Length: 484
Ligand SMILES: *[C@@H]1O[C@H](CO)[C@@H](O)[C@H](O)[C@H]1NC(C)=O
Ligand SMILES: *[C@@H]1O[C@H](CO)[C@@H](O)[C@H](O)[C@H]1NC(C)=O
Ligand SMILES: *[C@@H]1O[C@H](CO)[C@@H](O)[C@H](O)[C@H]1NC(C)=O
Ligand SMILES: *[C@@H]1O[C@H](CO)[C@@H](O)[C@H](O)[C@H]1NC(C)=O
Ligand SMILES: *[C@@H]1O[C@H](CO)[C@@H](O)[C@H](O)[C@H]1NC(C)=O
Ligand SMILES: *[C@@H]1O[C@H](CO)[C@@H](O)[C@H](O)[C@H]1NC(C)=O
Ligand SMILES: *[C@@H]1O[C@H](CO)[C@@H](O)[C@H](O)[C@H]1NC(C)=O
Ligand SMILES: *[C@@H]1O[C@H](CO)[C@@H](O)[C@H](O)[C@H]1NC(C)=O
Image 1 (cartoon, protein in one colour):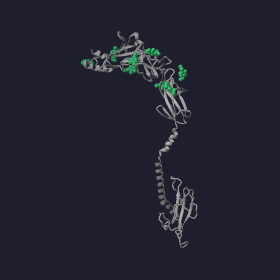
Image 2 (cartoon, helix red, strand yellow):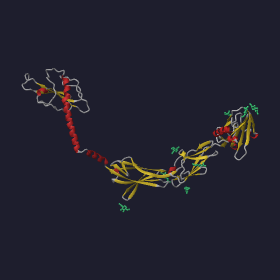
Image 3 (cartoon, protein in one colour):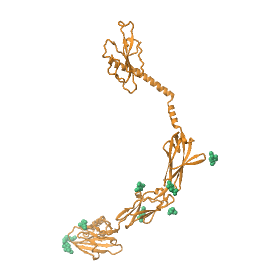
Image 4 (cartoon, helix red, strand yellow):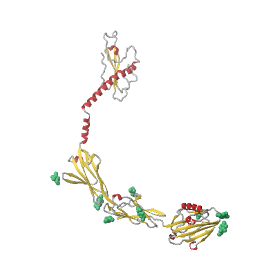
């Protein structure tokens, strides 16, 4: 009773659990002995050796250890295979070359494994000591041939037309037992939809009718308990299209189906649609009620100067000669002198008022800047230049203040014009008053010296003369100083 509960556990864990219960309920029967197997199902390959591992342990003093292996198939009587007491093995002579055990190790070696060896193997361990302890385990053994590489065929090999034709994929496996077929598309299991159907074994996949969505890399994955093999991919030929007909161009402006092209530009149109096999394309020009096929092929070049009309209607036709389906798209080409118009628009975009205002502001600012600059900058520079001169020669070197009393205005003035705004003014670092030539002529300058003549020495009236110290003059310079 308690023994039975221990003999057929659902799993080793459950077995252990049941043994613990037994230990509590019927002390002594299960108590010290525990038999375990790593797996209750073992898959073997025909022709190879199969090892059935068994572990057992007990906690009482034992005089005899008995191990018995039995084999049972469904609906048949269990068969004795071999047994042992202590270290001596007593095999069934019928199977003595097939089964091996090395007690006290209870594990069984089956060699070679045959299909007939498939079934349940029961191991029973008896311990003789103070009473008898007994425990057993059952292992299910399956025997299979490994799967050999499957081969997939697609029928018809020539392919099928979308929505019309059907495709049959068959998976053939040269060898293997207990085969389980799985169809895969692009590496994932095929999604079986209403147009798909499978044979009872799943080794044939029918697609009726085929659609563009069925295009892909198909393979057949075949597995059994001991191995798994996948076929090479096969890509059935499915004819479809044309879909998504479009006309595009390298140039010009496309708004809807209207292309606007500059006058004189050649424009290349490209017609494309998704289809297999590739479409044949033809281009048609429509004028009034008549149409002319003007070209075959996916590209059309329109040289706009050759187009008589400014607005021309075209049509691109795509035809799939296998599916027999066609599609066409219309488009209009408008030739404009858009380039010139753009320029004109740019010119107009600045209103005359804005231009005048801009120019005026520029002039005012320029004049102010010039004035300010003249007032401060050259004077400083020239003062530096004058340091070496005798005091007697120049009484003063003063800024131009614009007042009427010329007495205070004697000195040296310089007008400098710089060729561009970005150029940093480069004042001559030193000047040689005696010589008229000065080095460093990146600027255009004229120095005016305003000299007071002493009346006693020269004349009665004040004479203001200008001595022009010419400094590499390149531009036209107007003296701004008007001595009174
Ligand atoms: C088994 O071994 C034990 C102790 O090693 C011994 O007492 C017993 O007699 C042996 N049994 C047989 C059948 O040899
Ligand atoms: C039983 O023998 C096998 C080799 O035949 C060994 O791998 C295994 O560990 C042994 N088990 C025990 C419990 O000694
Ligand atoms: C055998 O078991 C009984 C009861 O389980 C116990 O009373 C007795 O001492 C045991 N004898 C030995 C030798 O262990
Ligand atoms: C494709 O299969 C459908 C239904 O199975 C059938 O009616 C049809 O005739 C088949 N078409 C071809 C071209 O074999
Ligand atoms: C199908 O297989 C071909 C060749 O192996 C590969 O180039 C292609 O990318 C595959 N297509 C998909 C959708 O995986
Ligand atoms: C066939 O495949 C389907 C799903 O792909 C699966 O549900 C079914 O169990 C398989 N049948 C067999 C006999 O393998
Ligand atoms: C175009 O065809 C329509 C009817 O087919 C006709 O009424 C019309 O006069 C035709 N126009 C030209 C320019 O041929
Ligand atoms: C279909 O068109 C292709 C070119 O796209 C051509 O090579 C092929 O011969 C045509 N087939 C038939 C049946 O017209």
